[in-house]
Length: 94
Image (cartoon, rainbow, N blue to C red; front, top):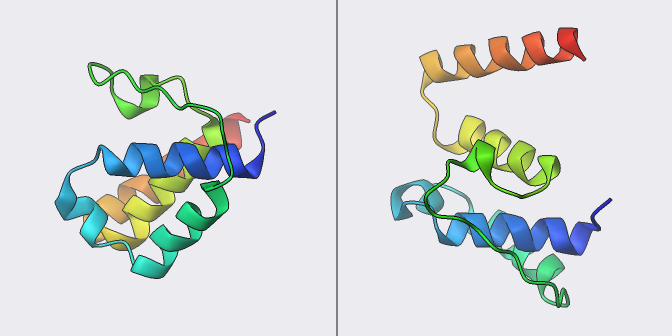
């Protein structure tokens, strides 16, 4: 299991490699909270830029946080409906 500091570092690393348009929609306080939490983490997060987010070797928690940020700060109404449907399907399968 990965600790919260490492998960925060994963999130920051992923966001630093996202399109600026996406990152700029995330409130600064949210971004800063992850930065503060990750500042003492000495582990390295490696991303393979040829892979999609879902295929990266990062924690499920990181992927979940990125999905939630997408939902709240970037998705339009139709995308939000699709995400909720997928999340509900995942809950049923698990």
